[in-house]
Length: 148
Image 1 (cartoon, rainbow, N blue to C red):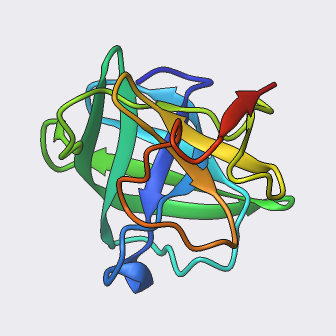
Image 2 (image 1 turned 180 degrees about the horizontal axis):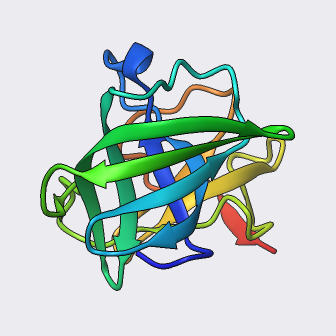
């Protein structure tokens, strides 16, 4: 992890499902990190043990950390973290996926509204849509296309 890199935090009150909130790494060394998160109403407090997630080369990793300090700075919350473990793989998938939410790439399935491409790998991709599709949908058979 390095300053300027996107890091993801799993909030303590969202343990039932894996929802990751985007943070920005401001500082990083072998002992811990300082992250900035825009959601200040997130329940993060000093003394809490949480998981952070980040990409390192072609791996998606998670690491246990403890919040040692939390301070508000404008609309952001700065959290200082102390490492509690070494990074381990957080990806249960067989292939590496690249996050594409901020790329502006869209997908269109069955001539319906265009939707944001969430992530992509050599074997598949995920889209954000209000439509319901069957898991494992073959995009080519359903007249789909990707565009920027």
